[in-house]
Image: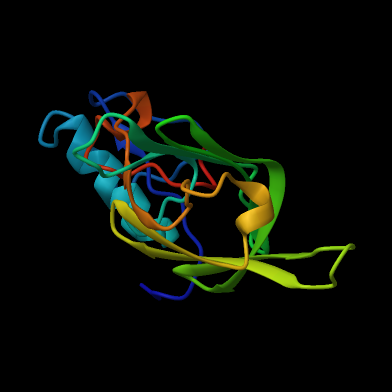
Length: 173
């Protein structure tokens, strides 16, 4: 058995012979593992890591109802992702839609925008740790009202894809 060699890992539900697969090939017995255990084994085999997911809806952690933030990340690939960001502080709103952030590491991304009027560079840094994304904004005043702000801790909002112990990541989605 060579670890670096690709192989098929069948899951059998009974003792039926599988055409084309030699009887000496190892398999997982579905009667001895739960579906979650089988999924974890597959995830480990193909190299996916839990809690590496960027895709989804994130909400700013805040105790004041009139001060909120929603971050929606989509179309994640190896270079970055598209996002929408909406924040509210009372009657002040901030909104970015269909913007792109590039990965600068596996848990960091950066959005940059050059303002045509004053040539000032706006930036939003994304730092992801497990189910939290910390946003830090620089020179983003023209994207939001005076008292609205993008900065803060955004927590992942649980959805259908996270019911199975966060094993589903951006590639699978």
